[in-house]
Image 1 (cartoon, one colour):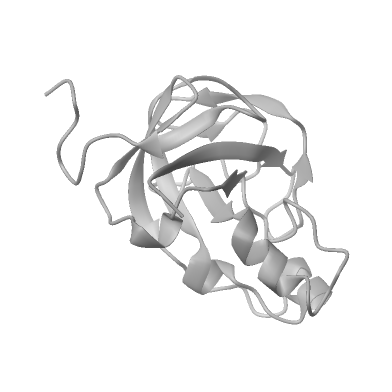
Image 2: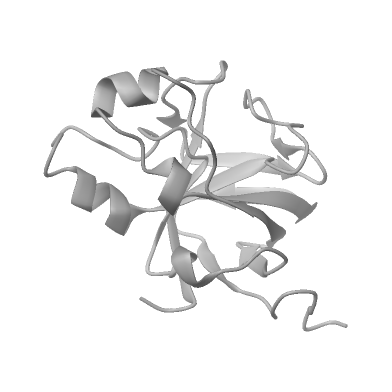
Length: 154
């Protein structure tokens, strides 16, 4: 995997702790997250990302897994999310995100856990703040934009 790839799903849900559905496109709002998503406005965890490659590994346990099964907002392909650090900036379509958290404590027995038997968000997911909002859609490029604390425009 590399430091660039593409978005293969844009997912939202109306309630926290539930599986998200791929809506194909959405508005990212600066300082908030995805318009209409239950996790919007949640402090530093405004947008969650997980790699489709990690979902594919989990499909060995549960073949019906799809983007959104782990309650992620953006499912990516090709970009090595595991290599990113807090403070790294990611260009997603025309939007700018800043990595704010790596992994998380999973809710005990949430819907995601109930469906999959385990959750990969605690170890494979990343969370970002929305620095520059805009429209985002499936197929948009996603890439590392500068490094921790550094933007190409600085």
